[in-house]
Image (cartoon, rainbow, N blue to C red):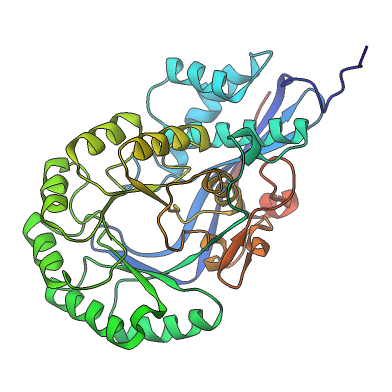
Length: 386
């Protein structure tokens, strides 16, 4: 008889959980759009789960109002007061089973639930000594190209950054829009395409910054361009408007803020409101939920772009493990540069990005090393659940 060990057994009971609310500045301010303004830093809730065998798994929640319904404090509170006590009561906390339990316990709070999913998948992968990508079906990519985001600004602002990042191996750039008049944004795209031609791929992201008419004006003005896609041109709750814009556009339209869970994914697909789904592991509730959204996309011939929520390395790793299992990704760079824009990050995820390409680590679980002392140094608050 083979003796069952801690590393080959099914999930063991979770005996302790710790929450760390942390905040870090960006290396330079980030001007998103008139919907979000200029951001100087990012805040997250990190989750450490310890099981009865002493193994540890890490998760991360990245709420950002008004982009998400919950704030970091609200995510931390629902984890501390409701979700984590329920998990500690379960003898076999398998990730999928726990998701169903938490949904029955409390609706919404996808960022908080996503942190739990990441941490449990990390634990399971470490126990079985396999990457989370293997748990999600197996990697079909060893690496992926990475984009670089450009804040709302002018073509002159963009060119200085593009020239620098091209030399570092980045070839896809996301242009944040929605602040300047539409005619100036059209000129911005034309100027950049005239300078760089097919050396770069450009994405336009209005972050809900336009009315329907402004969106149509922009799409008419860039109709002859080679933009990879245009992301969330209108308000997230205006799905009919997004569908109308998509029907009128010769360029692919992406849904970001409008895409949260399965219900929204199904409605967007049925309306024909998006050619691209912008998937964010934290916003969408963790890798398992994000995977189900990607499956809906694939069924409708919709491509997926792996986006980020101004994340630290744990969420970036969770997103990467999901991304490498997918066959319907857009042919462009994806948002795995988040930690490169932070003044500091308590993980080693940045080391996975080399020459504009992110590489899947050959390690069990999420494959990212977390410097717990650094986490505690950054923490605005620390709370325990036992």
